[in-house]
Length: 321
Length: 243
View 1 (spheres, chains in turn blue, yellow):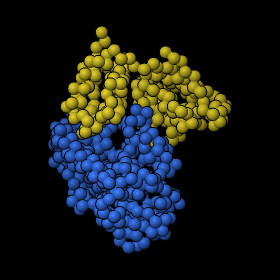
View 2 (cartoon, rainbow over the protein chains, first blue to last red):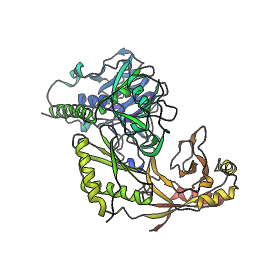
View 3 (cartoon, chains in turn blue, brown):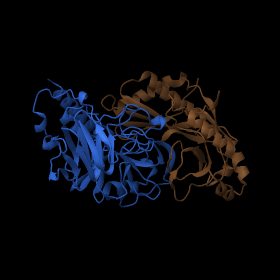
């Protein structure tokens, strides 16, 4: 099971669920920006949920199957085609040797995941296969994908789905496929530095719509909209930054940090996006609108637990012979 | 008995808790933060992914399937009680060669001019102190230091460079440090380290650690070339003094 990269597209890289436990040594967590989509792709194929896949952005990635292989593409609708015919996402696809899979650009979402049966076989470094291109770890030679790269899979890791629907008929119940609409509300937990902002700034954040700027990437989602005022300065002593942090530098424009961020920063964070809503940020494309609604940490954690239980039981059911 | 200063606990999203310590930033406060991190490493297993120190904070990343925010708060308070007897790890002084040659240090002249000093003054002032490593992060072996002489404090560049070569030693406001690998950056570059500061040939590549002290020592352009050539064949062994 091997794929060759014909065209690398935009910011395409190999990612899994991330490299945890080394932030204090300066290694970024990295990992898929939209872990919900990655996990569903792996679930469909019977892979471990943290198996590595290709994350690509908007359009341009083109892959050729060097032998027959099963793949699942999840995430945004980026105009997936097989040999120039439209193909479905969020389901298993059987590629024949020589067939080409391509993202021509589509209407919804920003990132897609090409998951392969068994997961992508690149060396595990510090507990993860995720690409951190600045430090040169993970992926193929620690870098983003280039044309000509050959990607092989860990087929032996596929141990699940001994029963149930045959591979090629598996698809995700549409109820669980996100809508990727142009206007999204993000649930946020205020802080950790909400007290560095004026009460008006917090009211503004929670009452306004922000537009996703074209400067956005997997490091962060840059926003345009009403400026947020600090009480006295935007800088704090550097500290660790969570995924989903809504950071506000002195110019007053918020920026939501994503999986590709470096772990340490010195700007105030007015709020942090709830774990279950981070995929919405990862899938918003330039021009989309985001708004914010404050929830308690308890509420956010109860939603997170519900989702984790879902993935755990789905994984358990699919592992049953 | 050593007392912990008071702390404030903040949620940092639904999967991290930030412990903010009161009091001035100091090596003493930093060793207390390290003690709490060590307590977590020793006594809290599954459920806490990592504890990451800052100047005045400890960031605790956790799995909400194991700890809710409120349960973790009580664990932190227990840790603060029990960590008082736990020592921070043994620290060392690491001596780091730096070539302060304008060809390798594009901002050295500006730092001197802006502070009305000679280039020699800047080199002397920069290489004089032993700098305390409050914590590392951002990039491998990237140290967060304090203690640079006020006389050479210089604002960051108005326009950050797209590429700063790995090993570049810089000044940003009252901070100093170095870029361990090639990266974009806005610090004023005043010197260059001839040897790799992130060396994947090493079994333990993360050798700069919280609680260490760094001392930069000037080397000539010729020594820079020689050290660089040596480093290409085998990893440079930094002189280290145990404290």
